[in-house]
Length: 339
Image (cartoon, helix red, strand yellow):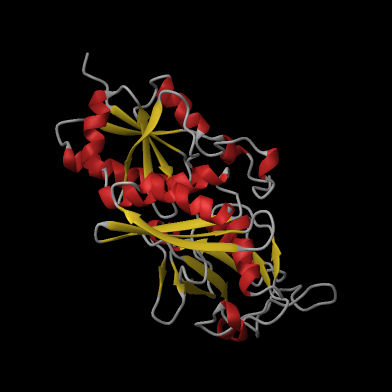
């Protein structure tokens, strides 16, 4: 019997599959003599599309990772590919973070409707648009920043971190929940007049092969017409821990897969996300905690910035430390924000 292929476990969403296939391509390029296959699994998070992720106390830990981890432990898979932001800082016994890919764009993107597009569509509006009890969709010009939005505008997000930072900049804005994958959220924004904008991760848009044109328009196969996008810098909104990084989870004692992971790992990214994850662990939070941290390599040091909206007024801090001790740096940042 031929040796079975090395199985790469992933969720079945479009974004998860894009990440898994990128890892698959890396594996095949680095190890052309080995066979690799994708194994798609449905997670608890995929089954709870109507639940509010913001109500994290009512939802299980490892919402998008548990079933993949079980497959690893039961040897039904050899690697599990995750958006690192979804991977809890406490992993099940017998599993570890084996590698982290080169980090993509960590920034957030503000998406909203295009006023010019809506004006062009005025001769053929939707049947209910603007009628009694039905609001008309609003749009704005390209290049709009958070500071430019009118008072009372509604931004849809299910992230407590995004909501807290948004309201810190613009406390006069409204926020509402939104669920679904990226394409679903874009469709809701395009169609529902009660929503004025939403926020998405730049890395996710890029991995789905969506693009922001020089004119500020959002383009892609699954992007509805008439949407604009504006990138928000980390100075405005810090990303969540691990954002834009892909993590590869493996069994602790699997030496064969450990050797493979050495070829897949991006050292600087691993050091940065190790600092961020140590910070999150020390803060006692998960991916839905109202905290954020972003680490960057600067020569032989790491600079890490953090913000916390837990337990009272907002607290911010920035530290630098040696590249060789990322976990210690993350823990010190947490202490600075808790002190």
